[in-house]
Amino acid sequence: MRIYEKQLEEKKPILFKLLSDSQKEIPFYNKVLKDDIMHYLNNYDAWTEIPIVKKETIQNEWTSFVPNVDILTAPGIKVAYTSGSTGEPLKIVRSIKQEIYHTKKLWEARRQWNKDIMNMRLLYLYRNVESEKLKVLRLGEHKDYLDLSEGSMASYIKEIINFRPEWMIGPPIAATRLANYCKEKKLCINSIKLVELFGEMLLPYQRQAIEEAFECRIINHYGAREFGVISYECPDNNMHAWTDDYFIEVIKDGKPVPAGSTGEIVITSLRNRTMPLIRYALGDLVELTLLKDECGCGQHSKYILKPVGGRISNLVITPKKVISSSIFDTLFSRFIVKYTNSIKEFQVVQKSPNSFDVHIVEGNKYAYCNINELLEQLRIHLDYADINIIKTNHIRNEKSGKTPTFIPLSQ
Amino acid sequence: MTLLEDIHKSICDILQERHNNNEVKSIDEFDSFEFIQIVLEIEDMYDIEFDENKLTLDVLKDLDALSLYIQQKIDSHDVLDGEEL
Image (cartoon, rainbow over all chains, first blue to last red; front, side, top):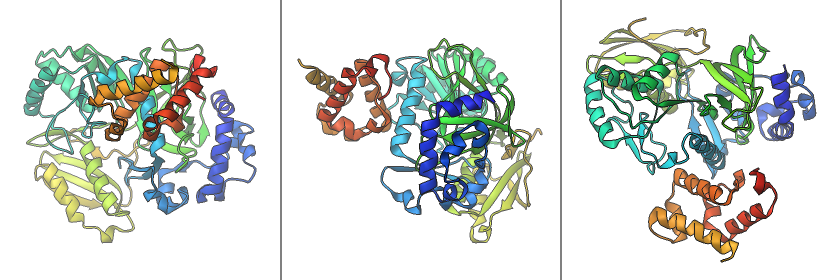
């Protein structure tokens, strides 16, 4: 498997340090790694002797994956949570220095599209703005969701036209909805030159709809809360993997697949030394290839990483509004962070405009949580629809490897 | 004007432009976005690349240390090909 041998060869010194430090400082790796660290770096077959870790493993023995619990309150440390789209959010710890390095790299990638992008007027469809210092228009009033109903769209359009955004950031589902609305109403927002999409998998029809409606270029950005940006599209339309920061493997049925084949992404972070993630199975389906020649954009990474199956959002249509199903990730994550180990997995199924089934796999501390708090939040956000809690032992995964957290009415 | 003075001036100009105030303590008001914006401007200006360990607000606050660091980068060969130290 040349694509993995090559990465191993290129990253040997940094991997040696990562494995050595992790073995000394992180209880889990102290237990599973042999003393002879060089053994794992001899060739890719030896590397695969390191166990693949899944989110559930880290959830179950979180303290074994950090040097000590005090790290959570240590200076210069940032704690983040995964979105909860695959069940219980995972606590991720990294240094603020690493965070700044990563954010700088993201802005460098954005500047490839336009050198002045940091000063350009931004239309932002997410809820939490990256920085108040950006020249940004954030739509809607609610802190947890963006109402995508036709009535709200009409009011957003006035704001957008006045603001004259030069670029846009958002999840594909919201950007597509806005694009389709503009197309239907024959509205021309031609100030937008670039649209960066992330948070969910970008589907071909979404890309086409947005490109056509705004006559703009699309930037596909693939990332995960555990790591940040993993691959980012360049102006030559190649999704360069950030292999300076990661060792990327693609695995199917426990075995690595050749370049260009589809499998589950398994990542080793070369930067996060606070909470090392070594051979971490993210749960997304991807394809990793190696360019034969340098890309025209001038980036040195020849590794191209395309997501081909991952999280997709749907629209939740209630009698009063239309919102992205990511609202469920937000509400459940908030609840589970408050009541740790209360819920292991969840799935919301819309039965009618006014009725939802909520399937829950109980965590071992379910008895200590106040489920009524979650029910009340769901009712508020779903316009006081009927919510039926259904307890179950397991929620089945889709072929993509992810468990959809929402099944819309039409399915 | 020496190179060090030139670097000092460039940074102060950037800060002044941001906050219409040339006092270095105003860096404390910066969020990471603004900090990165300044770092990228300095990198463009002197054709250098900050290494990861220098990406802190303290580096910007200590102008002497920053200037010395930038001068070392400029003096070294790797500045020419833009590699990180």
